[in-house]
Image 1 (tube, rainbow, N blue to C red):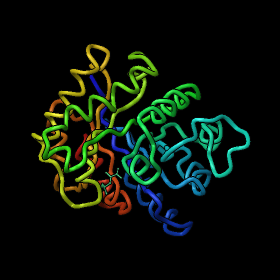
Image 2 (image 1 turned 135 degrees about the vertical axis):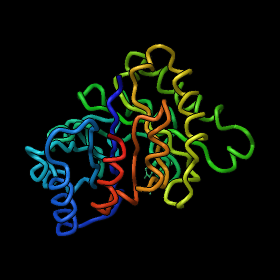
Image 3 (image 1 turned 90 degrees about the vertical axis):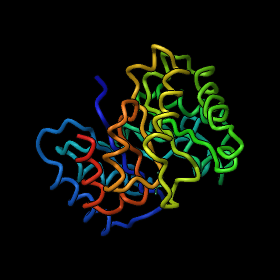
Image 4 (image 1 turned 60 degrees about the vertical axis):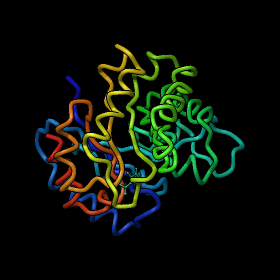
Length: 246
Ligand code: PEP
């Protein structure tokens, strides 16, 4: 039995006042016992304040990226140790915005995945194809390569300690969501690539998930929750998505 999880990726949004309000709304709405797990990933400068506000809540904290290096002379980077120290349990690795705007290769993503594991963090590995790749019928090929880079570096038992997020690049922040059937096809392929080790792994869908599209996606057998961008910035919408996962 895989426990559904919904993770909010705030990207480079928010400020002290707005974050406090958003988190207060989430904490209020998400009290008590829930079947689904929930976590949010604010920008680095707000992690410690978020950790304090989420203390004693059942909402987890994650970061949006980490350095492959340990503490030292790496100006501008954030280490796994710092994330743990700031109260994080999860960390995104290989988000398409990191791959595209920061030139992160699958090899670097694999190294970051391992560093996250080494620090006891749960890495959330993002994979996904561009529109062009989908139209060229290369979706499985691209996803397979992104996954295997991490499997080769961390081994299947290592990968199985993390979470996978299938995020078609053409659906991120565009308002276009993959249909539940399209997403299920890729999720089932990912599980096939991971073999028996992947049976217990949670595979999330990400890409313009909204309250009205969440239920259909979560009804699919290989979709174990969502990685949510835009809708995670609105407490009501995010909570509605979390409820759909229960
Ligand atoms: C994301 O940033 O991971 C994401 C899925 O964004 P959005 O929900 O806005 O498409």
